[in-house]
Length: 220
Image (cartoon, rainbow, N blue to C red; front, side, top):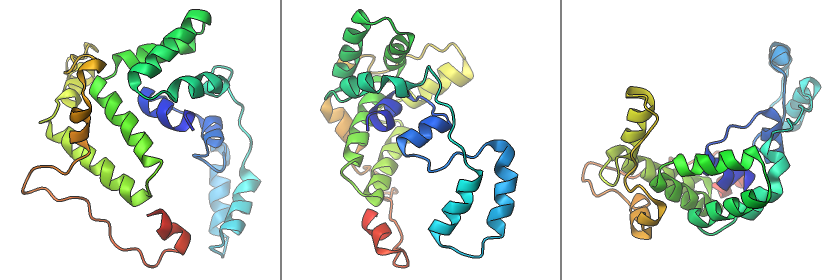
């Protein structure tokens, strides 16, 4: 759970094909050189039955190699550290592991967290954990509100500071505000999950999808 949630959400780590399969974010891995063949085969399928379609994809799929440096091999550390209650506790747990175990992966993970916007880290952690208890529809509404607040820039201008540091001045030295995790209060984080105080703003309204099967509607 932590690998696909807290760890990925807070560090922004990219997954390769093998890791996507392990996390359950992908069902098949098809090498790029076989994609055109798969496309031809799927075009010949005269059925919408998921089992039949999956069987066709299976013919062109393979089990990718899991790289030695993959975070998959650090699942015990990830689960132990990223299951902590707060971002501060997550970093402290990683630092304790680093004292007893020399591992470039741990050092890079700690550096990644310390370079990130403190506000963004706390928003992300709460959003990930709320999402575990919500359906897709609730998650989309929550993420929409967060995105609107971030883009508006009234609560924090960290997004624009990140653009400046990475894309404009390219000094890669953003000046986050607040600059430390302990300065980001729960009330500040709460604000990102609330409806915007703007008469021209509308909350996200998802269309009714009565044509979906019952199991899919339940997730919305």
